[in-house]
Length: 280
Ligand SMILES: [Zn+2]
Image (tube, rainbow, N blue to C red; front, top):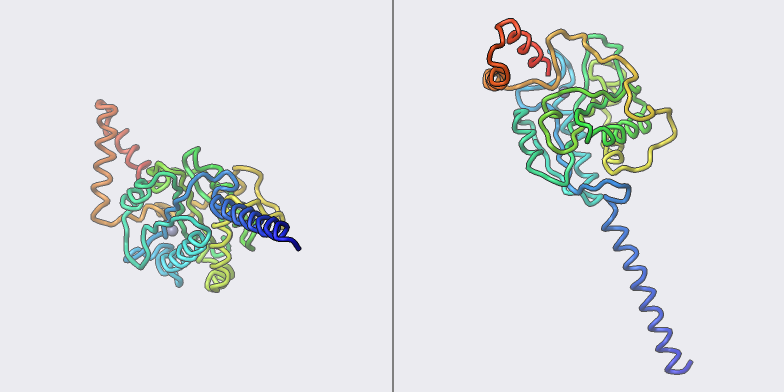
């Protein structure tokens, strides 16, 4: 080999190395954005916490603990994938709904994911539900729901548009997942297995990352409602568990808003407005 051809070969190998390096680098830096997801921050909200166990009174497995566990697994998975993750709570503490949305609204280029588990008076109720409110959240809800339903054994209870406080008061795309019923014995046994909780977290992460939808199970086509919402617990709502002393503040602020809007409203319409407000 002449000195010239040796130099040429060396130059070529250096160029090849750089080409591979560049390809790998661009692959890595665009990983979270590869499928049209144009955000780099994820705010994760583990439902309930502290005095608020979540679920129904007397429920054996506290929702707050399962929600935090899945939220932390989700956070780890997303961080490994290159996202910046912010947790509204990372331990067994109570955070108000107002604080949860305030944390979420601090971020641009972000999405908000609320992790919950369901409960019902009917022990047979089971499966996975995904909620969103704003139109800017619909595709994210669909992506997460498809992965959760397609990648676990949970029954498909559908994607629902609902005016929950944490969804309505966030400016970034916001989705709330109900990962299964802790009042269903079979589903609870599954949820108590760490491998299943990891699976839930991994599938939510796939949805956040916008990975292609799995085809191993039939899933809903687009944003649709496939089963009626559970309204078995009259007056009880999973997501409006506000701190007792704060309840009056929230009520009065919403009352103020409605009175400025229409000053001549009668007490009867005010009463009606109040009932709607409590159903958030
Ligand atoms: Zn909940």
